[in-house]
Image 1 (spheres, chains in turn blue, orange):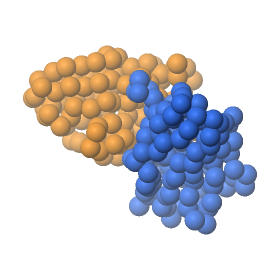
Image 2 (spheres, one colour):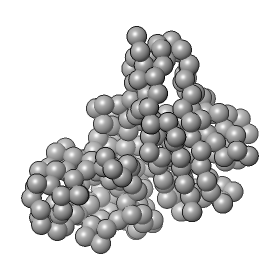
Image 3 (cartoon, chains in turn orange, purple):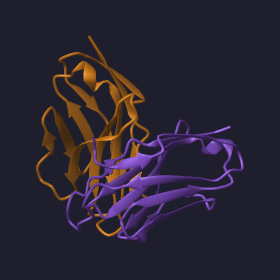
Image 4 (cartoon, chains in turn orange, red):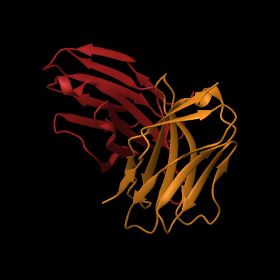
Length: 115
Length: 115
């Protein structure tokens, strides 16, 4: 069965510094997708970044990058130059092979950026 | 604004009652997903519809049902409500083209309170 694990319930980071949010996953599928979503206190879920299991390069989207280590089954999110607006819950999620479209989410990491 | 709309925003009802949550996906998206987010269970995938047909099922109770209509909007019906059904219910949509990253775009959610 597929599983997503986020071991950091909460993290603090100083403004303008970089922070890494951990995510490990478990799957026996060869084809899968990994996502990160941000949930601010207002409640909406915002898509941040995607990594496909066959993508050779680590995904990047602006200040967000995904450190994908397939052999270790980890997909850590790196936020560079943290801003106060980055304070939120961050969820790692996995999608199964094309055709199944079942998504599972981790329990989330609450990030607090300090001024 | 993700382009996904959900109504109502808030719903307060009593145990034993039945409610209907409505979702309109982004223009062009064929897939609709329903999630339940509660404090103790995190974000749980309930069910997915693709172009009117059920595609994947997650941890959806028998008291819950959903459907997707020809105009692609979807409804989630919750019946015989219990206190534990109080949660934030998200709808998400995606294009669902095989091989694409197929990220989901989330609506603002419906907060259900069962008294």
